Length: 291
Image (cartoon, rainbow, N blue to C red; front, side, top):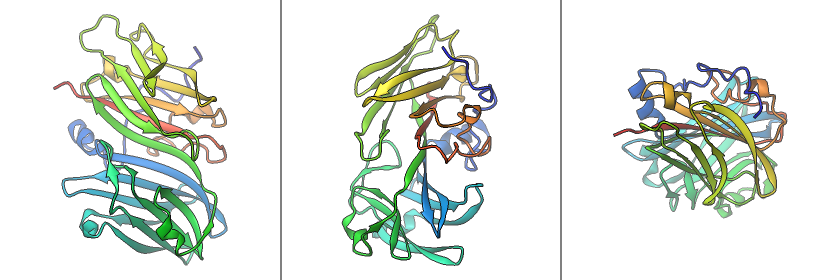
């Protein structure tokens, strides 16, 4: 087993979102409905980061689009709130460097699972000077009416909060236009002398950690679609922390990211993973529900 990155200490992985900075109970409730995705693309002649955050409240699903430069300075932001979802389709305009950008979306037929991020039947697109700079979702026809010119964008990171007693499940796509996999993390730590950690991909066990009390932090490499994926885990909070603490998992498709900041997926700790790499990071915060 390789040494864990030095910055991945007990305090280095605490969730400290802008929406999750109060008491532990408030942290859990607010984090429960939050998924953040980061993309890199060319915008107004420069490389930019586009951060899409999906959330859910009592009214319904909503999302925000924020554009940053590579130094992580916010350049513009737009929020699409549930009150606008009577039509569940629309557009807004934002500006970056005095250039107008059209943010369009259609969630009319969007399908959702347990996550606030849509599974299918939707699109979100950004158009600048007649060019699509970012397009996500499986419905593309409407936005291509505006333009058929599509800029290549790069997925950098997805960050998600998962909740459960023993099982934590999500979906992940490691390759652009690749297969969507069912990812499942299984771990029962309640009153067990020797708990173990199991990771399954499409029901197949791809990783197992025995004697978890002694191996509560570590990493190993698995293969997905012939692609090496390095898995990092820290379950210290599950075993030794408070009842509201989360474990952290990261699935990294490339070694191109500087491992000194590999687990700094929360910007309150350090910037997003290095955007110069073509790798993709899935970072999961797994919260135990003991009720």
